[in-house]
Length: 90
Image (cartoon, rainbow, N blue to C red; front, side):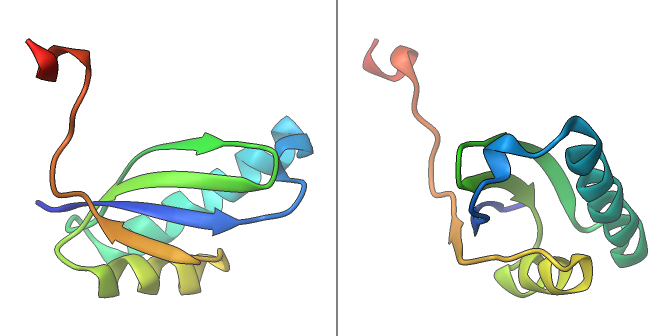
């Protein structure tokens, strides 16, 4: 299944309370269950003003559908073509 990186511009999100982050996660998971097994949230990175999420889905359209239904921005959606790390150099 293709992986995607989603950039969500959310000013101040790095200062959100743990309860706010939990609620947003619960909303996202509710929408994922509604959309079915063809979309999966892998993990997310929260920075000061953005959240970067990694999802698996058949296409970008499903990613954007999830964002719209969850009330989350999806300012950029990019398909992952390969993954590299320090062992790539070996």
